[in-house]
Image (cartoon, rainbow, N blue to C red):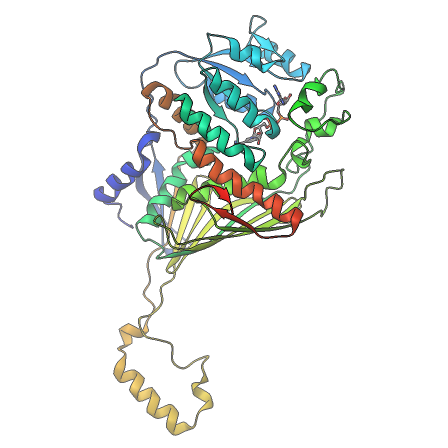
Length: 466
Ligand SMILES: NC(=O)c1ccc[n+]([C@@H]2O[C@H](COP(=O)([O-])OP(=O)(O)OC[C@H]3O[C@@H](n4cnc5c(N)ncnc54)[C@H](O)[C@@H]3O)[C@@H](O)[C@H]2O)c1
C-alpha cells in the first residue's frame, strides 16, 4: 500500500461509490520519530448532483437539529421549509435564527401535512424516532433520522418495511460511515493490509459534565413550555422532570444510554469498515461510577460481541467501551486488529502499523530449550539451523503509514450530502434503514444484556433476536 498505485486508487474509488468522495493518498513526509513511517494526506472532492430544490422540515430542533440543519443548508439547492420542536424556547430560537416568517409548530404532524416539504430530519429524543419516521414515510417524505434508528428492537422491522414500501430515501444519521477515513480503513482491510481481522476494540471515552450529557437546562423549563404531555405520548406516563426532557439520554424511559448514544457509532463504523451484518452474541456490563445525578443508565459500560463467520468476513470479536469519567481525557478510536497489523481509526484519520511473524517457528530464548541437557540442546539447535534459513527466522518488516484527512474535512456534511444526492439521483444511501437497524439493534441489546445480566443472541442475517 505504500505507493498508492493508480490501480489501488481506482479500487478505493469504487469502494467509495455513492458518496462522491475522491480519495488520493499523497505522501506527506517521513516522520522523525520513526524513519519507516509515512504520512499521507487523504484528499477528496465533494460532488453534488443537479441543484434541484429540496424543501426540508426539521423535527426536533435541539443541539443535533441545529448541527444537521446547518450542514443541510450548505448543500446547494436545499431550503428550510419549517421547524418543529416541543420546547417553546427552541421555537423562539428557530424564528430568531431563520426569520419570523418561518413555519414552526409543536405538532410534527402539521409539518408532515405540508405539501411543500419533500424531506424531514428527525432529530428528536430517541423514543420518538420510529413513530415519526413511520408517519413521515406515510406522508411521502424522505427521511434522515438520527441514530439510533429506533429506541426498541421491536421497532426495527416496521421501519424497514415502511421504508421499502414507501420507495422514499431513508438515511440514518451515523455520519462517520461517510467519513473518508472510514472508507480508507475499509479499503485497507479488504486489501489484506493487516492480514486476517480477528478483533476490533472500539472506545468512546469522555471526561466532562457536558460529555456526560449534563446540558444546560433553561430556567423556564416546565411541563407547559416543554409540552410534556405530548413528549411522553411515545413512552410511559410520568410526572414532569426537566432532566428527563433535557438530559434524556441518561434515562431509560426516553433514552438509550451510552449504548444507544455512542456504542451505536462504534457499531455502525465497525460494520461499515468490515461489511458486517452484525454479531451473533452480545454481552454487556455497566456501572454508575461518577455522575450520580439521578440517571438510571450507567456512565461506564463495556460490551463484548462475537461476530460469526459469514460471506462478508471471517469470525472476529468486538469489544466496546464507554467511560464517562475517563482519566484519558476522552478518546474515540476503533482499533482493527489483524494477524499482521493494526488499523487505528481516529475520527477521519488513521494509522496502520504492522507486525509480521517469521516463517520459522520459535526456538530458544524464552523457551523450554535451556532446561534440556546440553547435548539435547546442541543437537536440536543444529537441526533447527539446518531446517530454517536466517531469513526464514527473521520477522519481516513493513512500513507504518499515517493517513490524515484534509484540515476542515467534515464527514457530517458528506453524510448529509449523500442523503440529498440519493433523493435527487434516486440512488442508495450509505446508511439505509437495514444498515441503521443492524447497528442499533446490537447497541440496544447491550442495555438488555446489562439489565438482565444475560447474553443476548441475535441473528444478524434475519435481524431477529434468537
Ligand atoms: N449523529 C450524531 O453525531 C449525533 C450527535 C448528537 C445527537 N444525535 C442524535 O440526535 C437526536 C437529538 O439529540 P440532541 O442532542 O439534539 O437532543 P436535544 O435534547 O438537544 O434535542 C432534542 C429535541 O427534540 C425535541 N422533541 C422531542 N420529542 C419531540 C416530538 N415528539 N416532536 C417534536 N420535537 C420533539 C425536544 O423538544 C428537543 O428540543 C438524538 O437521537 C441523538 O441521538 C446524533
